[in-house]
Image 1 (cartoon, rainbow over the protein chains, first blue to last red):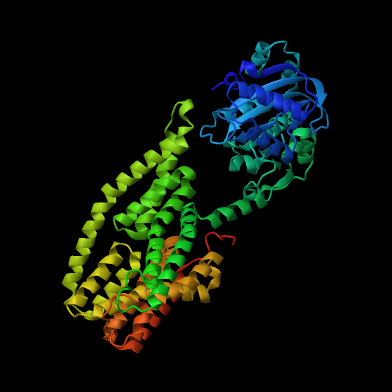
Image 2: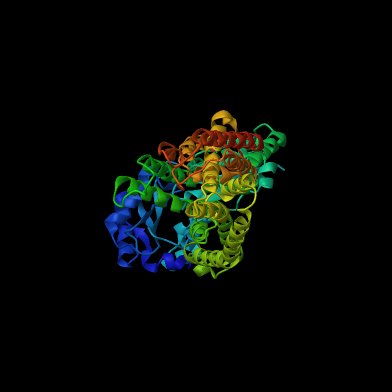
Length: 149
Length: 457
């Protein structure tokens, strides 16, 4: 499994016009529902919100990584949105969010390869030049290329 | 150069664990500090810290929101923070860690060697794990069977009656005893993938009649086979997910099962036949010697082939109106649990709290002639406890023969004493059992060391 299998082209929203955390979550869930990654949007969203309630997934540097492991998910998936408006996410560093990576994981997941991919992504997010590339990407292809690098 | 180690872990183990690890790595690199970060995420521990890493480290940073085993860091400088603190402020954490006072490694070494001693070299740790899961089954099953005896033991309970069901439930609980022992020994060795092969190995040990000793062997076999497969059996990456759920359990169960049947089944059957013939040839010899041998056999494996042979031999003699050996066998079957019970009462400090509780139940099982009550003690420390049990049982067996006690029923324990004609020389019989139990208790107290692993209650 590779990153681009998780982050399908349709899952990339380069200029999402959302005004709240919830709205951005709904948009990202919708694109993953369209590709069949998310089966039951309501069930999955509940898992994501529960995770947020445990502690914000706004990791700082303008990035949030909402995620949920849920029966509402049929296959592992990843979606990305770059926001036109800054959104408050109660981030660790207090700064608003401009990039959102959303992670969907099925409840029953025997293999763990996708988890390794996500852990690598998480590591990359800690690097400033990587975050800059996310900001600068002008197409979903460019974004995917940055991720694969 | 200062060396630091860290562990990161978060509840979901998907993102923050790794971000914190990366942040620490980055910050350390910027300060030219050697850093090793172990991540405990949902894929398990990665980049694991070795004992050497920990020993050499100036300080340990635990950026964790879940419980991690801190014992291995005993005696070190430790900074405990939430995982988000490491993401937000890795630089500050590292500064704090570096500025901590230098600690000599002596204290750490001492603590670690103490832990290693406590845990016993793996072997006892795995045994204790199995025993600890087995104890509730023995206690529940044994007490229910004892309760059913209390309704009367002269005739077998009538099918469908309360004592019948009590006995049934107790028996079923006992039938899980060896599988659970073997299963959780294997679980302790190789984690979840070892459980299924271990349980099956225990069932096979029961099936081929090897009792708990066979279960211990089967459990270790299953555990190490599963571990070996996990380590040396390489599959393509995209099949890795199948390892813990399909490949390891399947192969480990197959290998363990076949080896048990092919390697252990036949020798055990041959041994039982051999023992039986030997006992037959002994029956004309000195009665006290026969009592001694039968008694010892009862305690060697408690429910295993040797015990069963002795019991079947004595039961068979009832039909020939020879009642002495049966008395010896029952007395010898009562002293192991009675003896360990006495030992847990009088030398408390050699047992962990769990065993002390199991000791009380063993007392009840002892008076009911349910020898299995001693198994948790024998299984936890076979090389020290079994010899003690054997000597005590042999003493009791020899004494009942010397006292010329006769017993006409082959079960029931203390409850048969209330039946007029079941036993002759009741008081001498009780005396023989008491002496046997005291000998057992004294020897257990003498042989046994302080608990190998203190299980916190």
